[in-house]
Amino acid sequence: MTIMGRKKLFVIGIALLIVATILIAGFVVLNHQEERQKVFYVGVTYCGSSVQEAKELVDQVKDYTNLFVLQSATIRNAADVNEIGDYAVASNLSFAVYNSVTIHFYTENDGEEGASGGWGNANNGKAINQWANAAKQRWGEQFIGIYYNDEIGGDMLDKASTLESPFYQQTEAVNGTYRFIQKTIDGAITIFDYTRRAEGIFSTALKYYHTGRIIVEEIHTDEVYMRDFEGYMQEFNSPIEPNSNLDRAFVPDKYISRILTDYHANGIITVREFKLENNFVTFNFYTTENITKYPSPIQPYEQILEQNPIRNYDDAAKAFVNINKDLLDSIDKKQLNRESILVFTADYGLYWWDYQSGYDVILAELAWNNTVAQEIGLVRGAANFYGKSWGTCITWKYTQPPYLTDGEEMFEQMKLSYEAGAEYVLIFNYSEDPANPDTLQEEHYLALERFWKDIVQNPDITQGNIKAEAVLILPKNYGWGMRNPQDTIWGLWPTDNKSEEIWNQLQNKIDQYGLKIDITFEKPNYFAIGKYPNTYYWNQKQ
Image 1 (cartoon, rainbow, N blue to C red):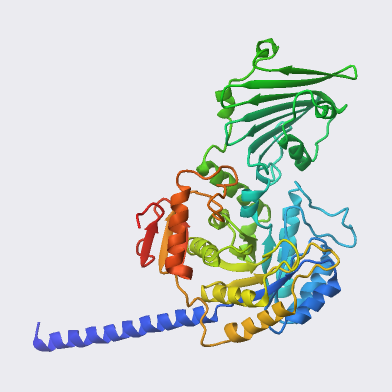
Image 2 (cartoon, rainbow, N blue to C red):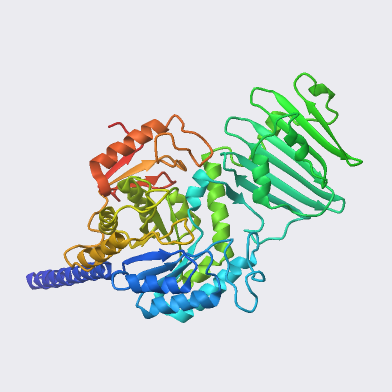
């Protein structure tokens, strides 16, 4: 090649390099502009029962918020909901509405009693989907989506929580048999099988405690009916004592027989047998001393134990994610997303698995004096891993009036959320006093206004300017509440031999990094190295 040819190639190479540099710089600028132009939402909820009060709250906050969430369980008349939504949208606010598996809309024509929906009715999901699509047509981009169910992770940690249900799956029962799996409020797993037959109803409940104790209850009734499941579980939660008055009171006329077999990990087995014959209740109690006299076969402890579907953390995670996927499928979330309708919830634990279930946005609740950096690290870490949006919900600091924190702390929590990258900040405005459902006071309105003017509209403060510089990776499916060193794991098990080390590592890294640390969990093929400047594992030595 001649010297002139080499010079031409050199010039062309330089030119291409310059063009590439310009394109990359332009791409970076556009990305930065998109990040700067990304909509940030800050708003309040209304949880009362008055359309007029909801409008008054809109008027109160419309100059320094851009989101209004109707979280009322009593305003469900579609016309009332639409009236509030129209008013909020006309006030230049975006709008979202709370729904759940037990809350449904109705119209003046059918009335609340005739409305479709309710617990265990798969049609409720279809009704929610239809309403959400109509809302999108009505309000366009100002309708951001539905707040669907509440604190699903928190309920798993602290309350009774359904982990399998044929109704949520929208499938017909096979041969008249229904199966429910529930985590009960006392931290046990219960499998409830319910079968309709011509000769009556047969049900079996197996209740597994983390201590190894198992209670098996078998009931045969003489009429075809289904008891309220929550009421049933409340009854089943409290093991009865032999020869007590409750023994007799617990066998109403509709029972033909009821048998409770109580297995203990140390090998002790007791059987309580109740039978209704000729309107007379007989009671037999068998213990280790006379168990050989029990006329029916008794299944071995190991055989009963093997029927427990949730025996470890992986099982718990799978069950939690699957039931919530079923719930999201029931409202056809994929179709809603195609119409740019988001599905979000607020929670105070297990954010990682909330996202894994399919939620678009999780709002981490800042409440009860919990550590803001920890909650943000958990929710932001999960959102970053799953490529989702996140935010915070400022809720009760106290369980009695004044409920909310003071205005100064609220302002600081909103500011920290914004700077840490939250796309949503929501104030939970609800008290337990039906006559005065609002918790927002003048100091809170002033804090909201100050936040809007001094932070959101301040060009010198960038949303997300506090970046995660480190990540702490916890064990796979370790669903620990992490609110204190003795918190439960999945609401089912006490702390284990990893808990103390994880707690100490967590406190150490939060003290070191503050808001600049994300907290995630091990996943197959997940390599955090390279995604964060600093990567730490729960069992890594200091």
